[in-house]
Length: 262
Image (cartoon, rainbow, N blue to C red):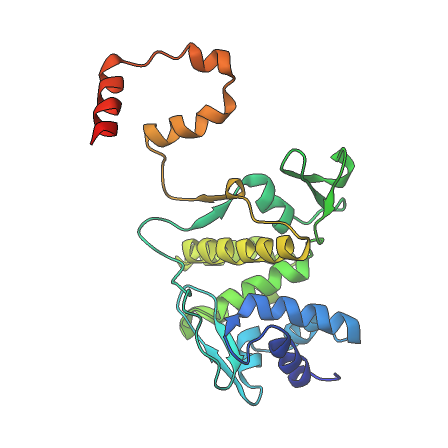
């Protein structure tokens, strides 16, 4: 494994992309892992190129790239199929998000790595951990920049170069990218793309560590809970005495009994 083409093919095969196409961000992460083992710096290779990650991968022989506007590209070996559960990121109901501590653990650059505490179901910096903990891979600036490059590859060609220039020509590429994304009105697309990409990364981390993604880690942005949903979410936080003190209108009890009889 001594060049880009070989690395891309090896990564795709290891992800099962000879059968089902995989998101570009997932492929990039796998290439970074394999490249690290062989001394190939994926981030440096892409940074030194005038093209995006998805464009470079698309030039590899026998590799197919499917661009989906506003979403991550799909990549697979020739003949692979689009997964049946693939869906567009944007929808009228909002897009999947993550609880604040989960999101920070997988997107925040920190000198102190984050860990997960199974006992309290929280992600915290390692120096704040008590009891059993599970490490989370450190977030790097190169990795965050690469995520943005992957997203740019999903946009129309006329929007790509200004965003690439923002990442390449600034001492603070993340802030400059955000300003440019705002000015070109693609910030919401980036937010939803990033949200699903990070959520996928969390799922892969959980799988590697023998964990199941908890519903409490996920939320859906752009949607407000109804009063009924809010009450249902509140109940687990109340003790038995507090629940007994709740005042429930007799009308609601009658309605419940009536429904149960049907």
